[in-house]
Amino acid sequence: MPNFGDWMHSTFGPGWFGGINFGDWVRLLARERFAVPPKYWPRAAFTTFLSVLTSGIQTVEDGIYRPKLRNLPIEPPLFILGHPRSGTTHLHNLVSLDERWGHPTMFEVNFPQSFMLAERVASWILQLTMPSTRPMDNMSVGADSPQEDEWAQIVLTQTSPYIGWSFPHSIDRYQKYWTFNDATPAERKNWQQKLLWFCKKVQWTHQRPLVLKSPAHTCRVRWLLPVFPQAKFVHVHRHPYEVFRSTQRLWQKIRPFCQFQEPTDLDRDDERILTCYREMHRQYFADRDLIPKGHLCEVRYEDLERSPLETMERVYDELSLPGFAAFRVKLAEYLEKNAGYQKNRHQPLPPELVARINTECRQSFDEWGYRREEPVSPAQPAAAGFEAGGLPAAA
Image (cartoon, rainbow, N blue to C red; front, side):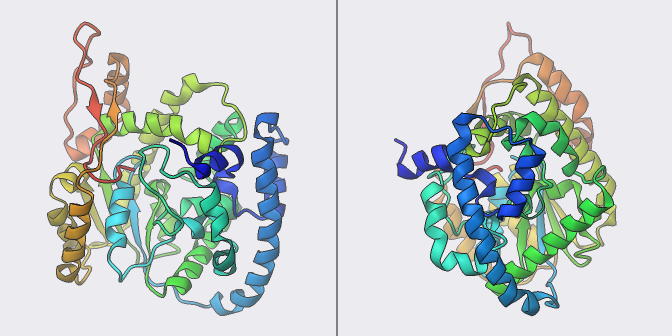
């Protein structure tokens, strides 16, 4: 049964934009020609109210902390890469159990411009408008849960592909921000500077090096390395069929969380998902040799599911991360506690989509040795698939 938070979220929840400042919010709406239908006026009005508060708090926070953080050296972060629904959230949660790492929290990524002051007095606002679970996989969430830094970049830069889910009339305009290859040099520089600034704030707050997770970073390695030259990376991949089925569900479930417009071309979702998958991995395969030797580890989600302790130990070994023996005890306790997580059930893919995936994702099939299936005719239905992973959550 939905709770009060679920109702508040569905009616007033600002989606990605709870922590945007007033000037950026108005500029974003102007870019979208203020095309917000009456159904979403309560959400837009609440977002506007929050943006005014954020602007005031940001002014004070910048005055206090910007001089202190301007020359703060950033410790090399650990980036978790992987296509959406490949297991990045699960891996992020596991690494975040290691207390030697800091991580951006749900509150920090939602209020990146003001969290250093606002969290002390305003965390109740996020709790009030948050759903009780994530929409795509029913995983519990809280204001202090590890969360992906892409959310912060939505607020800080307004250059993220995720904005296309909020303003679907312009969804194709935002697709260039997956790779940033077609973004302007000014947009790329602004994105790099804002990411570095956010990382400095989070590192200052937690007083530890950071583990950062954003599926979009998978195709941005060439833009991350100039900012974080000593960073380490762990990439998690998963069978393309499972990724596609789960990403379909993600797109269906994420829109009610964040949209300010009604989509008009849902029939193009599959094409966009396949294009994103192909281009993300094409870019990743082109860029991974730029990563210094010993700074990249690739893991199969299927191995992380079957043998999580052994897989995590390999990650630590390949990246020369110290202290796994001590961390193993806490990791084992977490895995035992969450062993009963229920997977989502997916319908089998139609044969035409199997054929398209075989073609569009062929580089991933070949690189990682995943088995291709022959398209199954309607007279021979395949068994329904499950959301891979016995633990929260394959995101």
